[in-house]
Image (cartoon, rainbow, N blue to C red; front, side, top):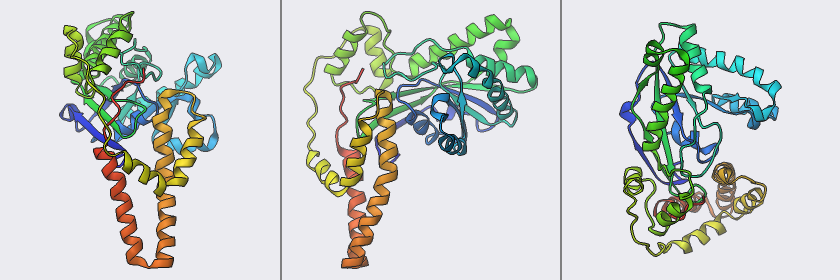
Length: 334
């Protein structure tokens, strides 16, 4: 992730309890790379609930299981599949009983639009179900805002903002179940709208987004952008930032030509814009080390260990230099 992301801005880590059961609830703009960014910038070891569709193949299911990922079934997966959620929910109850953490995406699906969508009540079944089964348990909810400068661009720039702790028990103790569900959903949603850039999804959404793009705003400066939206005082338009490191990009392609070709072939099959970043990261994380290792071995075979060592270091520095210094495309993709 360090070699892939230009900058990862993290705030609110001090809000995360060092011990005890925690439910992290994040917005979901960018496919499976969202939990990667969150968990690699989180002091707790996380379990994840992700959509069941990615678990269809047995090999992938087994691999994802080793990463603490669990499937959650939705109506679109088939009414018969919903019954499998009972076992998954029981697994979640046990995670909380062991005072571990769970990360879920309560909007129910991914969407790169810069807006917080209505939250599913599925997370309340998990939280209140665990509290019903283990009355002495305490569960803390931490909302998490994920904001990308441009979710399809490389190098990636992202902000991870952890919100204020919400004690789930307090809602169940004060109100009846239906009222508690509404109130806890509202409390989480309100924080998410402050922790990420939130443009109300109405008839003015496209115009407001276009004005922010034209002003070349830094979307990862969430507070500043939300302030602009609140006051409706948009900055003047600016010229796009020139990429003075473009020549370095072409050198990287030449040095990683086979991984680049593989990615271009894979990219043709990615039919959801929210998965572009996920597959690009996955393909490069696998292919670049393999082919860089093979090229290093060939250079070592023909020219010796010293030259091959220098080649490896220079190759890594080139990747790191471009990742950290090249400008991120500020134009939003939605």
